[in-house]
Image (cartoon, rainbow, N blue to C red; front, side):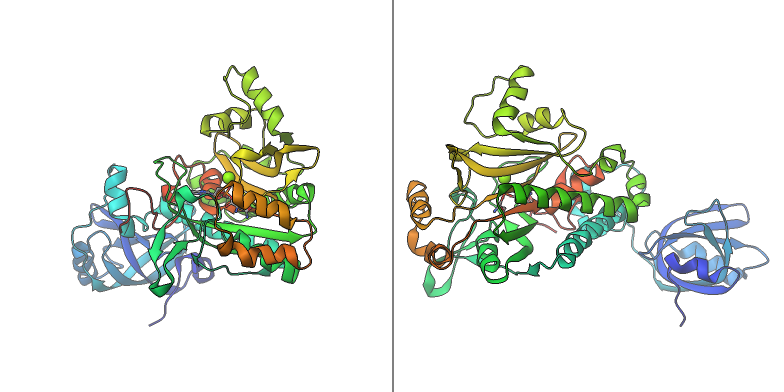
Length: 431
Ligand code: 4AD
Ligand code: MG
């Protein structure tokens, strides 16, 4: 049986075609029947008119329920007013399955109801728009690094130790070897890769036992982490701004209808062009105080602080040189101000908060050993990592971009739960 995808209908105007798909919705008006079909590539309206279609086609049409599956044949016509721009005059219906009463109807449902039915909710046009944008973002990420000679470095998910603080580790029993931990970041392996290949990127799922129930925390999320030998903090910021510009411009170029479907105001996205503003942590603290936020120097920026800082700019802002005490053990100290880490966070506009975290890495063996001690991290577990400082250590830098927060910001969503097909959060492990 021939099959035409809805997205290819323009090549079949004036011809007979068969669409295989599901009932999105349907209605009758006197002697005419309308059906909106979906096949995953788009929506197409089918029209059934007495005279063109047989009585048998009418009978079959009337048995179709929402989400029933079928093959539908008819003449394809250009129709400006129809969603997708084409309509089908249906002359044949082959029913594949009559669906049971479908739980998700055009009426409003609560978010928990929809989350419990996430496996079905994925069929709705809003979820299509979000997940197609996610796909575009992932493609833009891969293209960016592949086109610049970075080598893809897959990092393990079972790891022997913490990378980003011990409070958010998921542990599991690992045969006779004791405990294994789900990776919080592939960075340490990315550093080994950078010393082997010069420039690499790690791209995969990461895990954090986040006890916070916020609109930007998942317990399982995807992170992309470039790591480059001989890059200092400034080179790292150059890379981050070029990268963000590439991702956002690629979504604007390829997924504008999806952004419009979500009602996204693209003004802020169009602004995402180099150079991005760069401010120090000290300057961020000044901004907070000017805005009457009683912020104590030395603390990490919280969600509200990030919002206030980012509101001063019309595009993402890079905040660099944080107090070392709030940052990870592997970050290099600023030689001018050893109480500062050569860190950078990129804050998205419109209150979306941190989407990138990165730094220049400590490349001196003795200093790194001291940092491990300070943070009570077990040296044995890091011996392989310390080898990178024993054998040809060089300055190097990298960062991690959280895919879901980036999707949430670009789509203009108020929660990360819709940015990944099956979200994992403190209170959600199903479906
Ligand atoms: O700032 P983070 O913790 O940085 C690292 O893990 C570094 N090792 C990265 C590197 O330098 N290679 O996390 C990086 C990004 C954050 O900016 C955020 O976008 C995302 O990962 N992220 C989360 N996204 C969703 N849910 C969570 N619980 C997240 N935690 C971090
Ligand atoms: Mg961070």
